[in-house]
Image 1 (cartoon, rainbow, N blue to C red):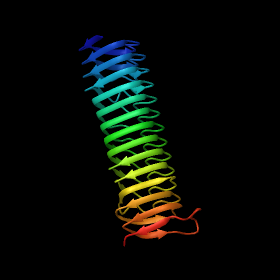
Image 2 (tube, one colour):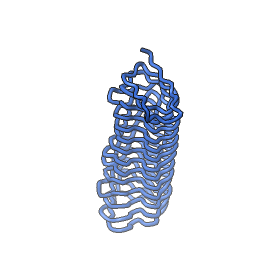
Image 3 (cartoon, rainbow, N blue to C red):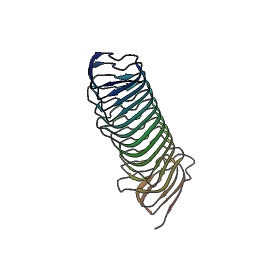
Image 4 (tube, rainbow, N blue to C red):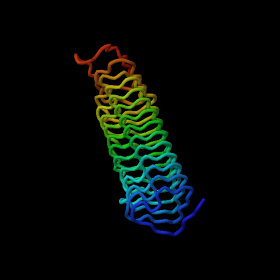
Length: 281
């Protein structure tokens, strides 16, 4: 395997179609597609400033590196990525990718990131400004995660999240087969139109959560005072260890809570309209 150390590149496609290459302390200046159509690439202590550096790449590792704002849309149409201890300042990262693992990665401008990706593993990752994160992605495994940004995880399938703090309006819309453990979920309109959403020991805040859901399961969750008008037109089986401010027209299932301040069951409830509602006080 060839090693390139302490070198700077610029312009268009300086390392096009290279294979079995180690980049050590290399800077990619302004330009486009520095490592397009490459394979078996390792980048350590590198700095990426130009656009689209890793497109159509198969098998690559990026460690202890920096993607500046100018390196937008840096990793698309690629597969088998391991990224560790890296700061990603560039937006619109990771599109149409398969098998990517990120650990100890920070993405402070994560808007429109991780679209149409399959086989995603995140460990100790923090993202901010993450509007429209994870659109149409699948087979996602997350542990130790902090997120600020709206409209996240829309249209995702087969997702497992553990130990997360997610601040996101409209999170988990139109998802299928998502399970979240031991996490804080903050934001309006959580989980609308989802299928097979399971929340375990989660804390939920934000108005009108979990409406229009199919096979919603909640186990030992806590709902904050602003989580009102919950469960409208949902099929829900929930055990809530706190008070609920209000619920509205759950379609079917079973809800058990410490107390429910307001139950809105009116002429707009949809069939079968047989949800069992229990409180301890």
